[in-house]
Length: 223
Length: 304
Image 1 (cartoon, rainbow over the protein chains, first blue to last red):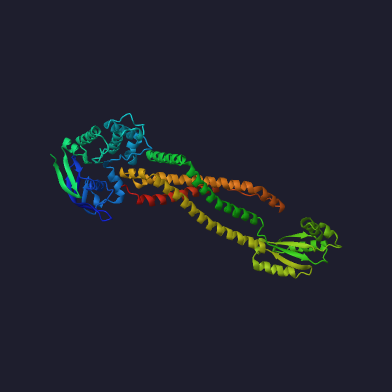
Image 2: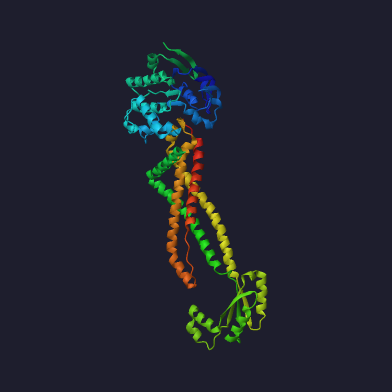
């Protein structure tokens, strides 16, 4: 599903965020991405969503060679990857329904189909019945669930989450993690960047550990 | 196809809603576009009306024959009849010395002073209007020489210079109209592209999110294109109203002036087709400006 070979990322200011990273994540697998802040977690996720381009090495995601993907193709590639952000990135002047529907609107899905899929996604994250509310009226945990619903409404084969439980208390963040676990059970490939070791121990999934831009552990579940 | 059209209508309505949500800046830019488009529109009407007036003058060329003082009005009539038979003459108008005097009294305001004169100082006048096909400078020149050599004629004067001057001035004004239109079209482009730039910057967060979930550049810029087109369209509407207002204010004095010259001239406003053209130009400029601005700024804008 995802294959990095000898990937480096050097920013224009000379800072080398990733150094010769190689790893493979098979289809329908789930992995945690850990490391102290500044270790390169966000950069790695940005390379997978083509927000940044690697300066060296090969990246293959969903059998697409990202190094050779032209700029015009990027939007279509991004529709195959659901992304969840720490700050949710919701549109505050639109209802929950419109927020979750956005990926479908963007890819031109019909009106009726959109309604059906949005309700299904909201049902999965336990927010059915709140479609007409605006994001500000929801709690932090609920807003994150809206973000998750938006990421999965397109049924992408790959989900990326960048510190999805960053601002939530233990119980809420466990619930969020359980959601990702469930999606993985349905066959979605999942990568979660987190600094909370607790989740890793609880869910017992392989770990990619970054340290100063280098991969120091690739895949073996932590004890 | 229906879904595609429906989506465009939705975006159009959303753009309208967005313009309505910030009425201050929308009104401002629409007003500026209106004034900017009204200026060349008014100049265009000025030229069009002036050309209409001057075309009534049949080329405007005439030869004035001032007859010698010894020629009486009967002889003048006879001479006029002879001249009218010439191939190069369309018609001849006789202004007898009495007519000339009373006209002069009426128009000059020297009525009483003229009454004091012992005799009429004014000569009889024949106004010779040439056939249109003889209106070239050389043939006219020959004709004037021939008429000048007639014994009854004191002076033959070709009155065409002012018409020629008017035509040159109109030509110049036309040229100025084109230059001015290009400059003001550029101004409209800059106005619209600036408001679109501000709108894009204001909605940067939203644009980034849409980019991250796979919105194409075309999808993202579509509402801005509609917004630019709407601004151009509304601005053109304002321009049409401004032009109508100006004409409304100018019509009465122009009518008085036309009546003074004994002309049935009426000022023409924009026709329906011309109004539609103004609207189309406004929309086109709005589209062009927003397309240019959106492409420039979206290319630079990448999600972080």
